[in-house]
Each structure stands twice: as C-alpha cells, then as structure tokens.
Image (cartoon, rainbow, N blue to C red; front, side, top):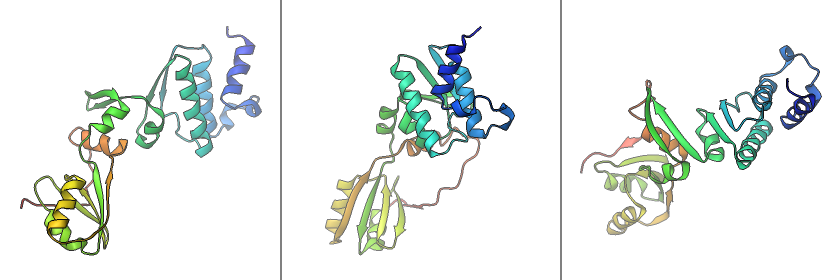
Length: 208
C-alpha cells in the first residue's frame, strides 16, 4: 500500500489539510478537483494526465493549480492537460497538441503556434475612421468598428494601413499592431475542423 506519510504529503500539496476528515460526498466541485489531483499524485508518477484541471476552481485555486503544474514539470515530470480554456493554457502550457474531428491539427510549442498564425489585427484610431474603413477594403481584409473612431483591421500590416491613411490625408491618432492570442490562433486554425461554428460579427472587406 501507499505509506501514510505519502498520503499526508499529497493532501498538504493540494491544500486539503483542513478537509482531510471530511466525507468526500460533502466536497465542493473545486475540492473534488483537488482530491482528484491528489489521487493522481499518490504514486509519484513521472507522467500526469489531467482533464480540465481548473474546472470548478475559484481564481485562487486556478492560480494554485497553475503554479503546481509548472512546479511538477520543473521536477522533470511530463504533465499532459486536456482543456478548452485557451486563455489558461496560454499561461500554463509550453507545448500544444490540437486534435479536431479525430485528426491531428497541430503539435508545436505554444509560442511558435501563436507567432505563425495569420490574422493578427491592427488597432486604428482616427477621426475619419469611416472613410478609412472604406479605403482599407480588399481581398482577405476584415474591418470591425470597435467605436465610432476606432477600427480593428485584420489582413493588413500597420505599415500598409499607415500608407493608405497618409495618401488619403487621414490623420491617425493610434496605429497599434495586436498579436493574436492563443484563442485567436486556435479559432483560426480550427475554423474548418469543428462541428459547430458561431457567426463572426465583423464587417468583411470586399474586393476592391
């Protein structure tokens, strides 16, 4: 069997010391998540496989598990996570594997995945945003109006947008490239590999 000392160590690691004598049936969802992780750690495994580990955890619990997983990886363990929370994976994971409809779509470091993904946007602020939006339309270009004077443009570089504005005599108050997030990159890559798709609320530029 597993030594009592190891059990106590794991309970302490997952922060369940005060609930050690509480019946499992009375555990909250977050406590249940911690218990599941504790169970996985009992045998001191070299490889951990966790499914949605932050499910049910409050912000403090999410930070705790993020730190725990990084510490486990730093010890030389392999930690495999299954999750739909791209924002959390961006803060936790180092390597990404994406599977869609049973097909391997990506197997790459997270940083390279985001860097290689097209679709990074440019935030543009101008008094004549409406006129600029009309000038920027073209194949593969999408322009969304965030506010009356602010546009989010995808499909054009900031240099190109600046040239168009200069040639038209439009003064720009802001021209800021926005790197795609992991969620943006994921949505771009899996656009044709998901069963259900939500509508995209943007103004699509037409061929000029």
